Length: 433
Image 1 (tube, rainbow, N blue to C red):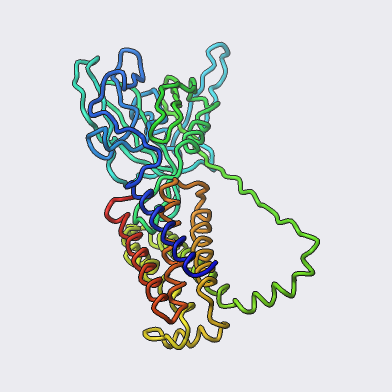
Image 2 (image 1 turned 90 degrees about the horizontal axis):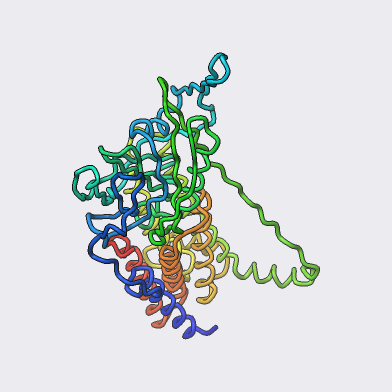
């Protein structure tokens, strides 16, 4: 691949990824949402009860729709919330009316997950309480709960209730703190719905768990909503055992028979590009290290809000990644601001060719992104975020390729890469992702 092809491919991928990720180009071509909510767009959780819009919204408008409501729990509001948060003090008294025996006491298990109050952006939904003599109105969530870490990954619940009805509609999703967006990014609602639904199965305080089809195919949903009917409560209150488990699959490599014959060639190539491997390790380590530092500080000083740490973590990424790239790719004869660092880098091996610098940078940053999200338990990302990360990878790759050259063409590559990096970081800050 020659340098002109490298520049062309880099520019095309960079532009396309940012345009699609930012919503300027929409390849799906979905039509706009209607401006009003008709009764046939609402869901009636209980017969003769209020209606609810089966989505959440950033504002009091359907145009700002976000995620779909995916779980409904029937029961008094306080009871539903208490089954989630007051586990350690709860007991369940299960009486057998046919046998005159001592009642069995059900106590919460030691391995139950503790749900804590969550702080997140306000999301609204629309309810029509006309069957109870009320009026249609937009309401905020009644409470938010989460389990997990703020700066890592977590399950996040937004619960909505009305005074007239004995049901709670919930929106539960999995999210992680995106260090490049400075806020949480949703990665899934199906898996979190299944996990929460599964914890209600076969519990003594649950009368029934079922699925109802409401056709909510937007907002990341498949049209189905989980419905839980809590059993009648006596003097005591039921406790919910909510456990989240994960299986990690290990994929082993397959050895090939011809590896011995290529050993010398591989070793020579590795020696010539030893600085490239250092570049991969440095970029990967910086991304993963920033996440690990954030989680460690969050655990060490829980009384300080995690948002306070972002002011240190974010600059370490947005400035540190380009600086590391420049130091490890720029030839010593071009050294300016980072002269001392580049002298040390010169001990790590021969300077990289532009194509090699481009490739090693993309691999290092891409590997860092993968290990970062996998390390906090995230297995899938929305296409929008994947394209944004791809754009950042190619921007830093073009910067590296330009840094490795000492001519005017290298300056152009460097400038385009730096501009792409700045634009990619600014897009989420200005709400384009």
